[in-house]
Image (tube, rainbow, N blue to C red; front, top):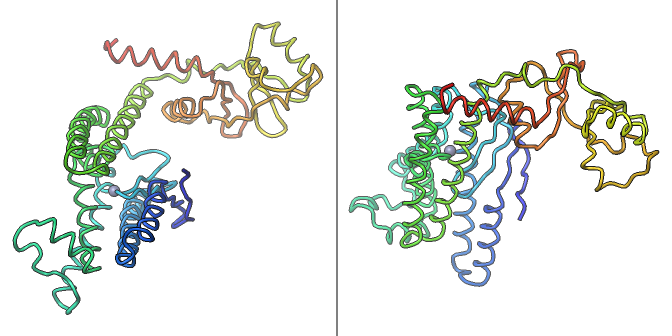
Length: 367
Ligand SMILES: [Zn+2]
């Protein structure tokens, strides 16, 4: 199933994750066939959930934008959301402020609701917590009092996101920011990843035996989410020591896109290359002999029609950003340009990987 783009707020793209879409479909189906009498209130709870998650995520984003972190898009999941930024804040103070902003919104909302229902005679079960937490009466009250449904959803969203010390949840980020002050970003991430794994396993078994499939699914999400955060931390750590000077080939072999395949191959065989940079009308591309088998061609085909256009890397880009580009998009070769967009060299993915593995090993053995 596909995720659904809902448009932009403050220049940030809002995307509904497919699980949210699935929830909406399940809700409509179950309302039509199973419990039409609860139809209106169920629909309202769904809208409440959507609005609460959206405002929770926007709160993160507004603070991130204030701190000059850019936010590209927000993906809304039924249990919260994920903000996708170009780069995650490495500054612990920034990460802390961005992470608490979401749950803080939920807690402010329930405080305002609590005050309102104690001033005005609105329908609300005011004494529901007087005898401790009783989940049967809470479930009853959710379907009886819409304002209580809104209150409970935000209490759960805020508490769940803030108080579970696991990545990628807000609580894990807050915890990482606090630990990061002492240990540094990477070390803090490694520690929290271990804690997250424990939390995920406990939550998974709790979900299987008591809490239901949703809880087990959240546990899986936490497990993979924290592993991914850890990979990013390892990547950053190793990228910090990576010397780009070593991997940029300043005498790149470049062909013009207007020559024929035969001419290109002759030149490549001469210098024993199977991949090369191609200058196109606009920008650059990569031609690879290995990829040729999948294409239709004759010896007179122009090289440009067999070339895959690629983005360029700025010579001032950080090693981490360049490495991320190679690893996530799977490029074989990228052109490096200066601030005037003039070609100054190329980076080959294989060379970069080699250098990256070396710097990882150096780190491991403190060489
Ligand atoms: Zn959050």
